[in-house]
Amino acid sequence: MNKYEYFLANVPGLPNAVKIGLVKHFGSEEALYRVAEEEILKVPGLKDKERVSLLQFRRTFYIDREWESLAEKEISLVTAFDPAYPAKLSEVYNPPYLLYYKGTLPGPEEDLCAVVGSRECSGYGKKMAMELAGALAKNGIGVVSGMALGIDGFAHTGALEAGGRTYALLGCGVDVIYPKKHEDLYYQIIENGAVISELPPGQAPLRQNFPSRNRLISGLSSRVIVVEARERSGSLITADFALEQGRDVYAVPGRITDPMSAGTNRIIYEGANIILSKEQAVSDFLGLSADHVWPRQNNVSDEHNSENSVDNSLEKDERVVYSIFDFYPKNLEEACKETDYSPLSFLSIVMKLCDKGLLREAFKNEYVKC
Image 1 (tube, rainbow, N blue to C red):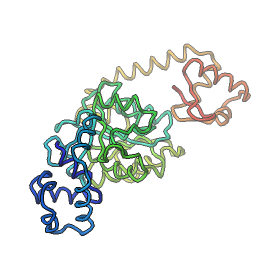
Image 2 (cartoon, one colour; image 1 turned 60 degrees about the vertical axis):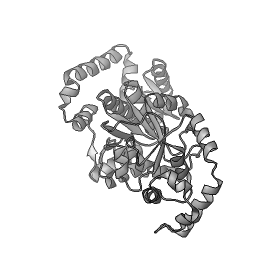
Image 3 (tube, one colour; image 1 turned 90 degrees about the horizontal axis):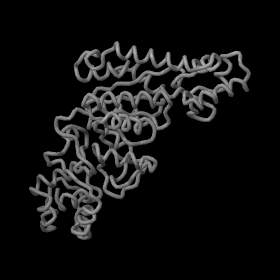
Image 4 (spheres, rainbow, N blue to C red; image 1 turned 45 degrees about the vertical axis):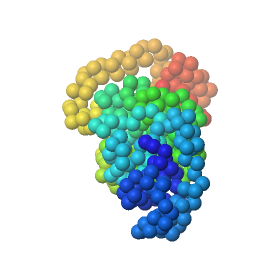
């Protein structure tokens, strides 16, 4: 990557296809930067406003100063002409002319899977995102997501905890940590993958940036898993892009009464592949039997022993109340109606289970199993 490529990447008002066309026309970004203005005026197919924007920017862009600033921030760049540019992204509509990144880009042979979903997710969504991402990572599949709150963040975390690699496509500059709550996660991703953006450094996380960012999440991946999504969720935009790009789309089913699973249930109905377990997902992706990925007998035994150990540690009233809750948030009042306990007694038992680390309050007055 050189400073002339960085110059062309920053010219405002030039579509990616025009930037690529200009490089092909002049032979290199440096040639474009140094060529006489009259030669730019002769470029066929270049619109007047694009020509004006290019010439004005070239006169005012302090190329050496800007390049030094980029180096100080330890930001790397790769253009569509570079062998390190992810090949899958060159297949998408309007591929980025340039990518900014911090960390290490995925290798050309690395298998990648996007794991996406809603920012406001349930305990069930968190559990599924982390388990699926962890299973993929343990089997050598890199996890791609958007570093947003909710499912995205849990997917990155699941991959990292499994010792795998993960990549975050941002809707802002790679030097902007958004959301701020994910500052630690941001640095962990850089150490075990990369944060990537087509937007220049310093670009704020504006709302209009994210739909375009979503096409890169799916474009970088071989397949997309939607873990949990409401009927109108940004993660469904990623699924739509995936279908347009010829990627396989998978979804995790949820209860038909749960609004947090309305979007995923709908796309399953419309033809998305269904995720039934982490074993099934990995075996589908790698072409292996589920027993080869994880011996099923061990899983059954572990789950059985885990449930028994919880039951054996609880009083009778605690076991009854614990059995009512699930990994979906459940309203306290509605849960109480399923028992013969008074609201006060029921709340007291719930608090005991919280103290033991078996339940937690996911949202106000809504509890889930830990």
